[in-house]
Length: 126
Image 1 (tube, one colour):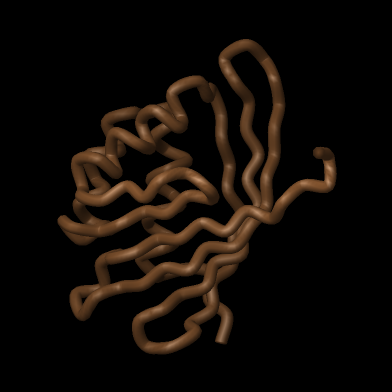
Image 2 (cartoon, rainbow, N blue to C red; image 1 turned 60 degrees about the vertical axis):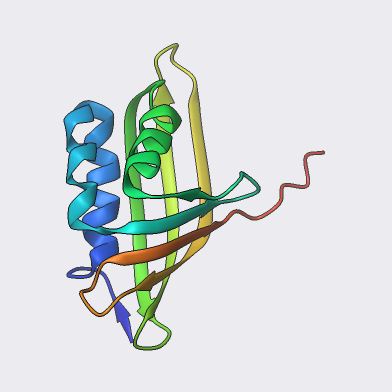
């Protein structure tokens, strides 16, 4: 079943896009991430714990002046949501970028994210 609204992932994506314009929105990560959650973002080292995850995203998006995600979600099982996304952004110096990928999000019994794994396809532009 595919869903596009109502999951913790929808709240997370909306927060990330908002945080580009409202950095204080990152404080709301406590409403989507479990305190000891882990984020695995592509090939970067894992980030664990709400404080470190918040700072990771603050740094990741610090140079952006605009960002927009479009996504769909599918429940793989009772604890795992698969997210297919496309994101586009503009940096402070006017550069544009885009990326697509898949995320696997594990949630706990309270519906909070315990693990978010971002799978970015490898580019052929090596």
